[in-house]
Length: 131
Image (cartoon, rainbow, N blue to C red):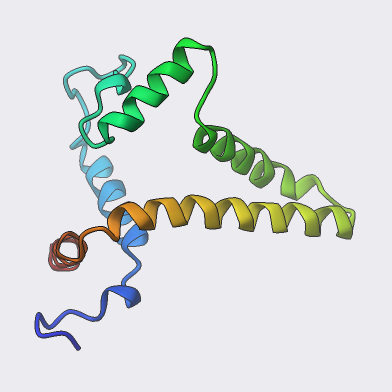
């Protein structure tokens, strides 16, 4: 066990912890009546996205295109929604393999961004585990 007394970061399911906290806050009504509720988000100037990625996304948007990540997320959603209807074993196997590949790609991108700062990862784990 690390000196902080927390289990190693690998053993924490950060997504599950974060999702549970979000669901709990929603049940309490913490997100009701927030400023801008019901209005579209302005993602063109998201400070959490690096400036060069924002610029590339703006160029794609102006050209009527979308980033590859968005296309892959759409494909994932379509695959997940359609899995129940696939009865052919080969087709289902291909769909599951494609879904696994897409999840891995998106997870790798997300992990690469978080992995840049071990300190940041540790602080997230401490906050989520400790409340």
